[in-house]
Image (cartoon, rainbow, N blue to C red; front, side):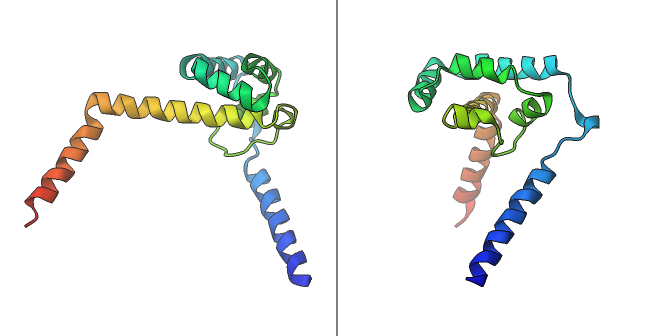
Length: 140
C-alpha cells in the first residue's frame, strides 16, 4: 500500500515537473497574428479533405469549427499548439473528444511526409540509400 502511494506521488511529481518545464517565458512570446498565420497556413497547406472527414468522424465535431475555436485560444496556448510538445492541456481536448490532439497528430504526420517527399525529390534520401547499397555490395 505504501509502495502504491509512493508511485502515485512520483507520477504526480513527474506531471508537475513536465508542466513547469513546458512553461513559456514572457521573453519568448510571439505576436498573436504571427501564430495564427502559421497555424492557418499549416492547416490549409497540409490537411487534406480526407483528413478533415476522418477527424470529424472520430470527434463528431467539424474541423472548421475546431480551427475557429483555436483562433480564440491564448497566445501561450497557440505557441504550445505550434510546439513539439506531445500533449497540450486544453479545453479543446475535453470539449471536442481530443480533437486538438488528433488535429496536431495528423498535421505533424502530414508535415513530416511533405519534408520526406522534399528530401526524396532533391535526391538526399536516394543518395544515402545508394551509398549504403554500394557498401553492402563491396563487402565480400
